[in-house]
Length: 90
Image (cartoon, rainbow, N blue to C red; front, side):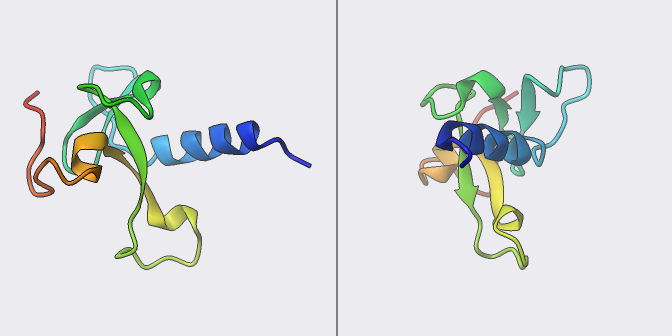
């Protein structure tokens, strides 16, 4: 049986790689969500300037669970930020 912590880490890595790369920055550390908000790998689950969460995006047509998941800045995911604009100016 695979430990839950390992499954969580593998899932987090797979979703992280769906984020957009930022030219000139290490993609292992920093990416953008689909709305252009910067997120940082180490800030997963944090309510910080670069914090992010795994969002279940039901509007995406996909045959896999992973296809419905995306990295999203926590403020956008919480509905605090506009989903049409970046919540942080970078």
